[in-house]
Image (tube, rainbow, N blue to C red; front, side, top):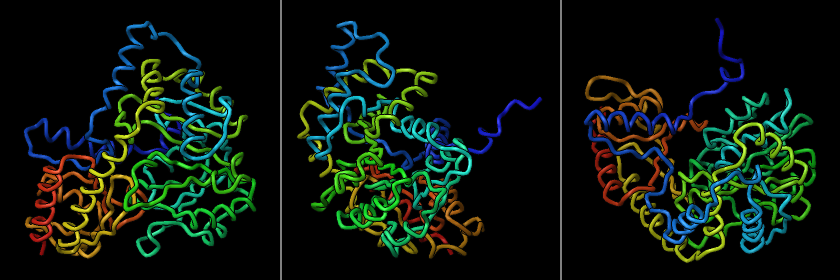
Length: 400
């Protein structure tokens, strides 16, 4: 009996979750594994946020809430967008979901019809194309390699747009590359999109607070007021506030789209955890001073790992402006053999051999739409990063 739908057959398990799961299995089996696959800060959730959650529990804030967010959290999000991005929204333009992934899922399922196209620059976050496919749309992948800084130009975006284009996804700072679009680059993209009002913009800003070297973060909707109604600006508390397990993502955008997303959520998960929402109010309204000090730690790790990688045989790594990932090339190692005679033919061969031989778990670039690279998350301790770099270097040296 055929139990599975065609929709579920179209999507693949998350590659990053698969790598993380494999690393956990090997650790549980007694293997010495360093996991650099997960994009999860090693910092703890700040104390004031945890105390807000405890207070919510003690005060009985444990019931159902409004489907797509409490008024208090929506107001905190409105205030955040005004304070940090100079964007003005009403609370009926705000949606809160169980993580940013649900927000994206809701937006695509609420808007995509068969035949609709979604422009996705590659490398991309692994879930974008699968969510588009599940919604019945067509992913239009545009490869953006290291020669263009892993970023899409306005000219290439313009050429990709047609009457079927429903969405354009913009992720800056980027997962997996850490690349950031400058204000001038965003302005050029904005000019193209203003001239194509039928194209919705999904601006995934989840790494907004993780930028380095005095890079000035801008989100596309704030650069052109004509784009505000055309843009769904997505963010969340997971990365900046070290709240991955709390599962709160949010977005601001067109009122009708937000209402449709809420309708869909009412028939799936209903509201996110009331406790997590209370904690997120404190995260957005409370002390923000720790954000810079934590970003400084990530910058130090970035500098160390990029320097180490560029000294390794066959590895080249650009310096990212944000997030907590590097995306080095391993293309110069293709054709080489491991000590047991296996040929490195692509990036998946490389990461498999690296895990088996050196006990370092990373994610192949092809999972993000660009073969010849691998993603390392440096959201872990200095000691583990240093150990992992030694292991990767020794592994590369062992290839012949």
